[in-house]
Length: 308
Ligand SMILES: [Zn+2]
Image 1 (cartoon, rainbow, N blue to C red):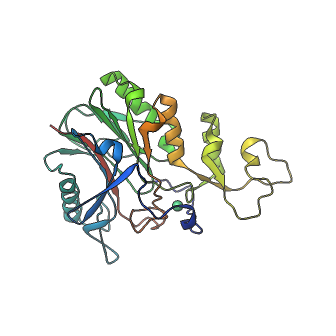
Image 2: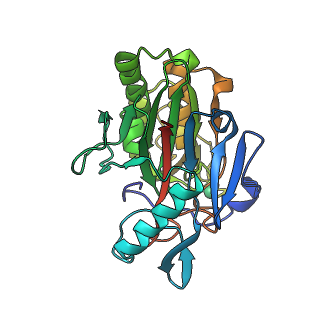
Image 3: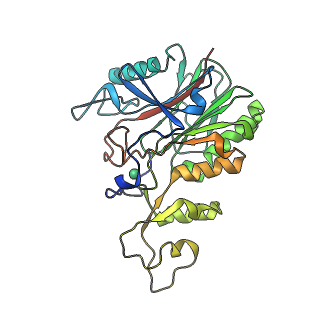
């Protein structure tokens, strides 16, 4: 989840994001009362399992609503989470695979899994080429990214909030795949799952400044809050603001765009990157949003694995 240095923008989202949950590049898999989102390019690969979970259809009780919460939380029981996970894996026909999650810490740590880890494993990305290992990341606003190298049959699951994005976690996961599996970025397929969108993700200008110091294209990933009072939109991003014009205190960040840019920079081809345009905050009916739900919410899970 994104960290707390920022606030939620709560108004005027819906008209900027289509209600249609999937574009042509995405498919909805409905199975056992669940709806799992899949990137069409990845769904065509027969030896691959992958999916991005959604909110409806589980046994967890969140304020009277039955939801598919896949992460342990104070408000939920372990039994419910295990049952939800069982249903999610069943919907993907991945019941026989070993789920390999991470203790996510907003880092740039990438693990290579040859088998499920014996205990909790701190980090934010994992890679493998072992069939039967189901890599997983959990999110509720942050960006889940799944990668597959079809030539070498290697995969990755990545969790990227603003801190991970700033630390180039996705580039580092690809670098690790190159080292471990001789992956060529030009042949990698990527699916960037639903996350909080540039419509809703308000961050402090200190965050924008950090991105500017790290990425030459950072200003393309930010937008100003349109209250109507800004005399010179984005001027503060491109030059030192004149003394009589105070900088805004916060701006909007498009994390999906920032991660897509990093994928392109790493050598992936644009047609090989599928980006979900669903915003977790705009679509809190379908997804979980830590910000929209003020912290008390479930966790989505994104998984990828090689079938045995
Ligand atoms: Zn939104």
